[in-house]
Image (cartoon, rainbow, N blue to C red; front, side, top):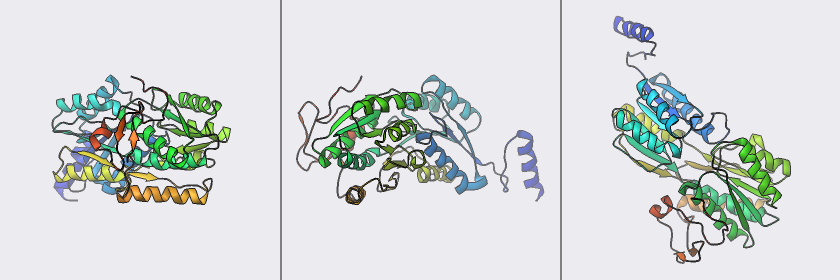
Amino acid sequence: MNKRTLLAALMAATLGMPAMADGHEPLKVGFIYVGPIGDGGWTFEHHQGLLAVEEHFGDKVETVFQESVPEGADSERAMTQMALQGADIIFTTSFGFMDPTINVAGKFPDVKFEHATGYKRADNVSTYSARFYEGRAVQGHIAGKMTKTGKIGYIASFPIPEVIRGINAAYIHAKKANPAVEMNVIWVYTWFDPAKEADAAKALIDNGVDVVLQHTDSTAPQAAAAEAGVISFGQASDMIEYAPLPRVSSIIDNWAPYYIQRVQAVMDGTWVSTDTWDGIAPGMVEIGEITDAVPSDVKAEAEALRDAIASGEYHTFTGPLNKQDGSVWLAEGETADDGTLAGMGFYVEGITGDIPN
């Protein structure tokens, strides 16, 4: 070790900071999580992305994270603290972190911020999300084919476009697979609350539902479904270890390639504010293993739908489709534009109940 490298290492040790072999400090990469890293779902997969960054870059990066951060003022304090501690780029991984991200980014113009699932950007704030609705379409097809009661349940978190898109996509494709299908939606107003999620699943099952889908983060609905012997799907992560049967498949959020790409951009000095919205084709949304609980013909149909979406041959929202009030939304063969999908605030025709304000 030469004197310069030794001096850098000694200075880093003195300051409590890691040093790379070439004397440069590693890039500090921060993550703010809305749930615990052990939730088995949403936050678990974001943390897998953090681990992938560590594996890919080695001692070129230092990662930090804070888990179970409530949306709102608490998240703003957590981001501020992370920026003050020297983070070069901070990934804020929940929709409700949007305004806090914008607020903190304004105070730290030299720090790069990446906000998941939001739409507000700034010179140092990018946004990114996945087209989860593409995976919901595949789930909906399986659900429509496998329900025996004709009743499908959906546990929804918050009435934001991301969640509404998923409900609509699942219902449209369940209805195509089985015209007699009904969908019952329960809003729980939380991303992660195992007790609330389990209660919602049990209420749906008590109402005759024999397929449960969810847009919440815990594995509790799957445990309730397994206990009742009804079908469930993994959400955000594969979750197969929690309910091997009758869980039939899952949506997997694969954030790792995006995180690696954006960290590399900061290192290269090429990072710019941008909006990313990727789906099945680029691999940001994956369909987990379709288990043996699914008949082989239904599995083949689901895989064909997945592949058609990935190739661009088929769009998840293709007319004819009407809004819930019966008004025409998409004519025969017409597809939804991204602007409408990004701001979606309505149910499609056939779904009962109102979207909460």
